Image (cartoon, rainbow, N blue to C red; front, side):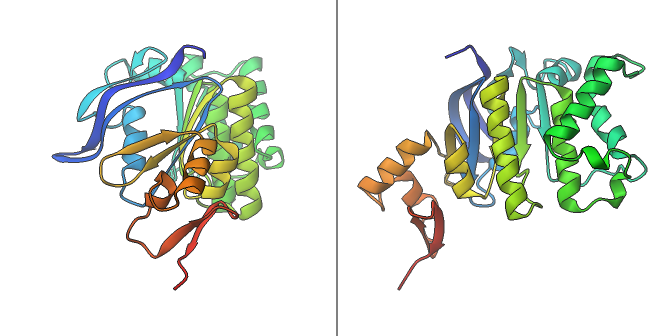
Length: 265
């Protein structure tokens, strides 16, 4: 396996004295798509924002492309890592082209002038998410789903070896979610990017990802391949990571659907 693009050593994340995920020692290499699953509040977004340098680890160190994510410098990090969140950014006066072009700023210098190559990269990013026909539209005129596709295009235009996405399909319909997951998987597989994302779409995560991180909310995290998780569940439904993921809730994993369903009485 290639040299890891993301390295986490002894990493614990949380807020103040509250630790949500403890003692993580993991690598993510180019070509891998990692999906993070767990209940709300288990620490998915906190871990992602710590990887991106927005939060300081409670303990340990994270590097992306050899850069310390918290102290390595924002410009250097922006050339190594791009992030997509569900936050609604105030960009109402800008066109779709303008928003996606923002992804090129780490590469264009102080004045942010786009050359021919930058313009090509912006157009290719929009094409990749199926938004070419919207390039002159105002960002404020788009639906939530269309806007989210533009945010993914902006991350693609940033042209980083690592992409981190916090529930990127949250506002998308079923077809768009499938297409987006397939796109991210192809970016990892064909362009050698390391893609790490949080998701509530269990079936798509199991089908498209090379690895799954399960956060149970008790500070522990399971790192497995989809095949390993499914094999463990088939062997012992109750005492397996997928069986324990929503312990205490009235749901059970359905291996035929690759998703959680209401537990039958």
